Amino acid sequence: MKSLIISIIVLFLLAQTTLAFDCSLTSNIQQCQNIQNSNLIESQKELLFSNLVYNSTNYPDYSSILQYNTKIRVNASIANITNSIYIKDVWISLLAISPSILENNTLYIPDVAFVLSDYNYRIEVPENYNAQNYPEAKNGDCKTIYSLVNNNSILNVLVNNQNQGNLKLNPINVHEDAIIQDQLEINVNIKQEHSGWKQYCTKERRGVCIQYIYQCEYTGTSNLQDKVILTDALNVKHYEERPIVNVNTLTKNYNTNQIMFTAENTDTLTINFNNASYTEQKYVYSVEFMKKPFYFAVLKAEKINIKKTNNILAGLNNTFFVNDIDNCKINTFNHFYNINSNCKINSVQQEEKKYEIVPFTYDLLDFFRLGVFVFMIYFIYRIIRHFAIRSVI
Image (tube, rainbow, N blue to C red; front, side, top):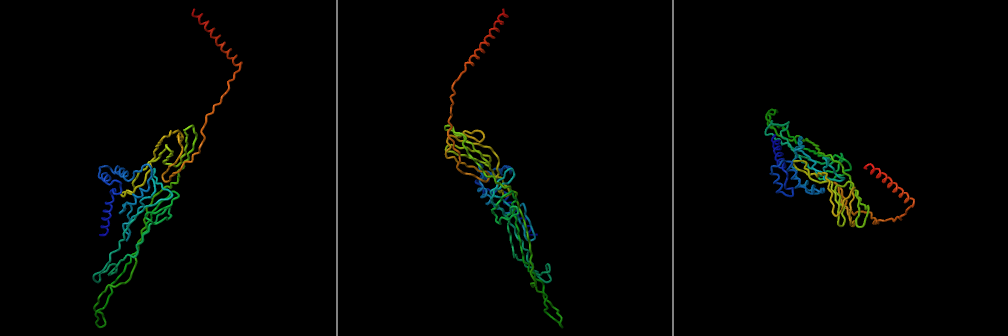
């Protein structure tokens, strides 16, 4: 009972030390502490903390997220503590997957990622027993000695129930939507040495023992075993879209080129020329915290629609007009994959406007018909005018 109370107190103190956001992991410790001591509500504080952790809003910077997450020290887990006979305070947590990105409450990961995990436990070996005097005994023993023989733990990182490693920062390969699972198995073996009271005669009379002494002597050994299996899991969606970009010249008139591009599976696309550029951005990135109160970070993608031009006149249907198309380069990326390459533009010859001279021809019959038509109009006019004057008189 005493050990149980001590265990609860220790866990409580450890939990208290990790409830607050760790400002030492941010870019501005003083500003972080000011936020922590402010009267803002928790959601507002978390938003400000996220800006201190991550400020690369225009692109996904997974290396900085991984670096931040691996510095967090988890002392205890309040989510899934388990106790067994001799294995106590067991917890395991799948802390984060990197790279990964959260979009519309769905966690996406690429073909290759790393699973960050942690776990802990302690072994509670029974207290030794030693009787002071005969006939004191416990469970038939005058003395019981316990010693830990085997304490074995193994972490298995599973992808759709297929084991892919045993490390706390473990690489995985994913080719479809999956359940990523941490499985912790602990096996403990404790040796239990038994001693019992043995009677010895110290005084006889007429062949009958009239005085005895009792000594506590070894009688045998038994083994105590305990086993715990604990799991934690995340559902992920496999992200396999690769960016595809094509750039073509539609027309060229004097010093102006009409360019058309097609882009698939791109989050941000930039087409650069010598003195001009075209950029479109479809997402912004921020941090959302998970596994509180430890504040592990995961990138979150939110849709936007931004287009920027420099010395370029944008047109319709993915077209634009630019003067100089030399030194064209493509820089594009989506959540996990990128392209940096030179453009492959199909060159065209400058269009020349051709004018066709059509000789003027006429027909005498047409002139005659036109003359008759004009005369008839004039004749009708005279008749109308004559009757109009007489009606007035």
